[in-house]
Length: 189
Image (tube, rainbow, N blue to C red; front, side, top):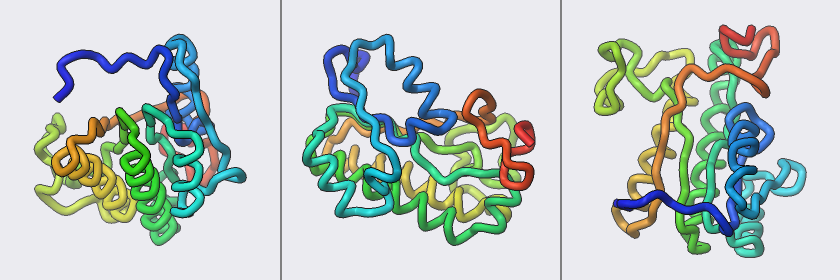
């Protein structure tokens, strides 16, 4: 494990999901780091397209990646669009993590979600509660995709020594949130 902070100054830093709530907050914060910030729109590179992601990483070679890209929504969206939430989030995570590894990325931070914890996990939540019980049925596909991303980052760290980590920003709300009347989270709705 790294014993010192990862210095971003002068690094090429890719923020995947830069237009979302978490990604746009990261962009505002990273603007102070004197880093070369990279972004890519969905129209330029669909992160679900493995070949496109690999080509983009090979051309841009980011040294650090913040993987905040995700298909997100509230209870209705998660429960109605189950296949899309599972496929889209699995594809984005696996494509970006593998491309980062294959192209020598020095640091990757994957953003998980509080939904990875069991529905009836003891409160307050503890990290070691993950995979100890059934997930909330309404967002299980999204949770499974997020768990897979967390485990993938752990596996690349274990097998390859990659400095890939995961964080769980829980109960977020703010600028850039989804305010759709049916597909947003409770607070935004």
